[in-house]
Amino acid sequence: MDKIFVEYPETWGNYQLLDSGGCKKLERFGDFRIIRPDPRAIWLPSLPESEWHEALAQFSGRSKADGKWQKISTIPDRWEINWQDFKFLLKFSDFKNIGIFPEQASNWEWLRSALRNPERSRRTEDYPLRVLNLFAYTGAASVVCAKFGAEVTHVDSVKSINSWAKENAKLNAVSEEQIRFLEDDVLKFVMREAKRGNKYDGIIMDPPRFGHGIKGEIWKLAFDLPKLVFESQKILSLDPVFFLINAYTADLSSIALKNLLENVTKKFGGKIESGELVLKEKSAGRLLPSGIFARWQR
Image 1 (tube, rainbow, N blue to C red):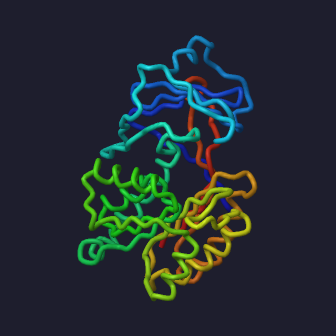
Image 2: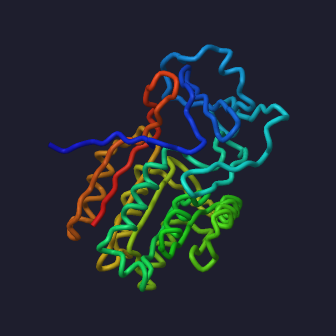
């Protein structure tokens, strides 16, 4: 019987999901509590209102158009958070995001394991594994891969987000030679890489449900993801190590991602696992659904 995994970070440095409910979540990032909307938290909160009132910032609304941050002056505009030996920069964006998705720590752990595979150690030292990170956001996965010896190409279509990612690289003493930052439309970039004959040993993609490329190209997940995955098959090396797809939409299931990923990795052997990424509350121990994934490893 196939297994569907449910994963959450067992330890997360100075981040905690304190409570959730009422389509909101109460989180602690470092020393600061914030409240953000989350439509999946359809249950009631566990903590009393007094605990929620201690938050120093709250995002109201469900989109960039109707939402805004309400902040108390004691919370800084920028601060840092630690995960294991890594540091990441946090700041308030135009939307509810602040620079990291905490549930992704489960994927970072998996990437670290894939890159530390003893069978790959000689190649990692002498010939760095080439990793492509698409929809790379603020670069947490790029930094993790680089710190474990990979040569990373980081692609995102938003200039300001790439600048943020570069700051994260500097925070973690990752040199410019280890990560190549590109502002580009991911599908067009992959197709050009295929024409150039460039190959990658590992591919990461974290596509949005809907988005725009650098020249206004429209991205729709259910329509464009299959094409991106099949095009990415053309730039896998002859001896690839991993392929990771992460998504946040309810339009697809992790089973769909697994079936899609199997189409392009079956010939290499290895194994595929899929499931949900969640966060575990400190208050009641409930699990907050936060994303879906499918991961292939040699």
